[in-house]
Image (cartoon, rainbow, N blue to C red; front, side, top):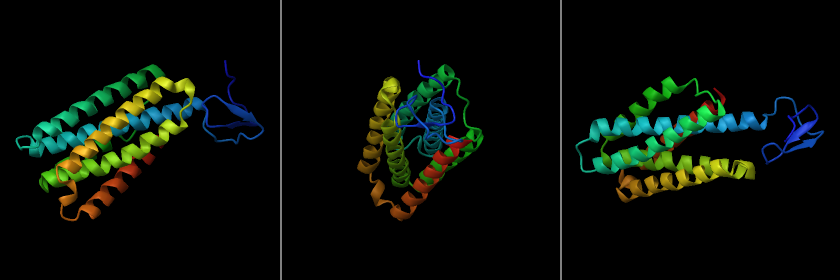
Length: 198
């Protein structure tokens, strides 16, 4: 059993692995890092669910509706998985969840009102950020979190599938694609940063 970190111990890349004499006050413990990880992933999947719900509110009878519903269903599965992990690890949700509830739906609905391709552009931008985020988490997880690492990899592959679907549906043909994509990516990265901490 690994002892709790003490002043004078340093965190390494492996959760629970500390080197003497390098730990700095304010560094996160392995439990705190895991809680941040689960909290932000839950927030991200909650936001994704709300984006698709906003898009379906506008495009629910369009030709792309079955595709949006498929991606929405996968996000619901991801969300339920992180809800279970929150209970198992006694992790609180982000305090900003009410904000993401409104902002996610608004982003989905607004991009859908610009057309099907703009909705897909939103998906591509979000999923590219999530790919980066999940890949970074995998690199930080140690062998003692193999199950979570596998879950994140499975979800990362499904998010990449969503990105590819968006590209196949003409996301890059959206007028002002680079501007829209950049704005959505910036917002997504800010949401990740905030949800880890609050």
